[in-house]
Length: 116
Image (tube, rainbow, N blue to C red; front, side, top):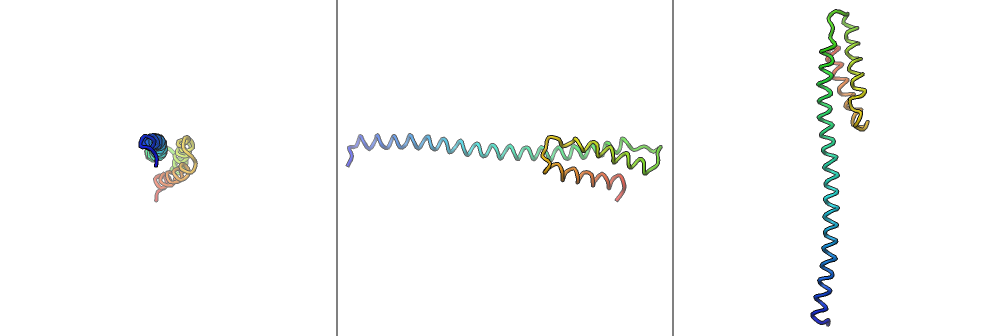
């Protein structure tokens, strides 16, 4: 059996080691939560950007609608303007996100320009 003072010293030493370990665990948990939060916010920003790009595409179509030229040439000009804008609209996002978004917006704009 150890003397009482020795038990107290060992216990406080283990407690200090445990405190340090707990602090490291908290830091790791906080880092993990931070990374997940940043990814979620980045994706929410992408969704907002997608809506913004769609509204801009509708505006481009409205501004390029020229009643003075034949309908097929006008439709072609509108679709070309939308395609040119979409080529650079999602430059900061990965292609796995931007590819489907561009396709979705192109399909919506095509149905607006050429009719359903």
